[in-house]
Structure formats: structure tokens, C-alpha cells
Image 1 (cartoon, rainbow, N blue to C red):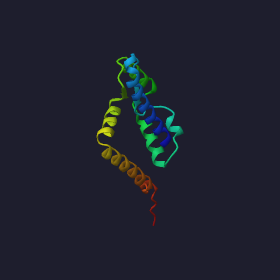
Image 2 (cartoon, rainbow, N blue to C red):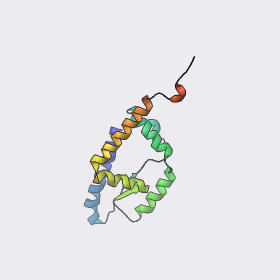
Image 3 (tube, rainbow, N blue to C red):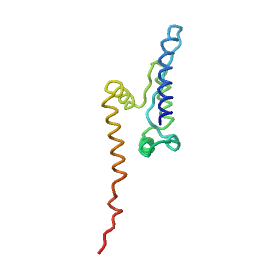
Image 4 (cartoon, one colour):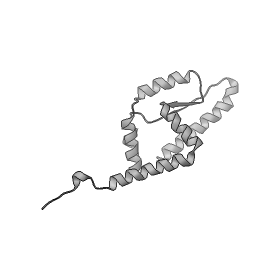
Length: 131
């Protein structure tokens, strides 16, 4: 996840810089920041078991397809905003991370710990009782 996230941050930073540098020449720049959507990305995730499990869960439970995301992004791009987030929850998470980074990261770390505990706990159906 680290290489993926660093490249995302680099694209966002480059886009924001180009927005300001090229704007005076009439060039519009937008950076697209979609949340998870149904795609093959979860099959290639490397990293901790937590990262793989969470990514798979977010992709599988997403209500959006690649076509949904593309349609929304093309629609929004017509008004040339700097940041395009989809769906609405992606924009809420983006603002949460910007305005309360400590809380955001603490919550994510707690979610990761919860997944580890759940995975380590014995499952009731796996217990064997006998005479």
C-alpha cells in the first residue's frame, strides 16, 4: 500500500501545482480522487493481512462500478474543479483527513486492530465439544 499511496499523494500534489501554474494560461487541471469501486485492484494488493483484508472488503462492498465512477467524474470535470471526489463519502473522508488527521489516523489504526483481533479469535463453529 505504501507505494500506491505515495504515488496517489504525488499525483495530487502535482495536480494542485499545475492547477496554479497553468490556470493563468486558461488550462484547467483536476485531480480525481475516487473511493474504492469494484475493480481488480484488490487481487494485486500486497502488504499486511490487514491491508489485504480491508482492501478486499472495501472493493467488494462498494456500490460503484468503474463505469459509475467514470460517468460521475466526466460530469464533474465539465465544471473544472481542482478536486473531484466520488462518491460523496469519499469527499467526507478527504475532509476528515484534512481537518482532523489525528482522529482519522487513530480511527483507521483502531479498525486495523479490530480486524486482527477478529481474525485471531476462535470461531464458535470451529469449537469442538465432546463427552
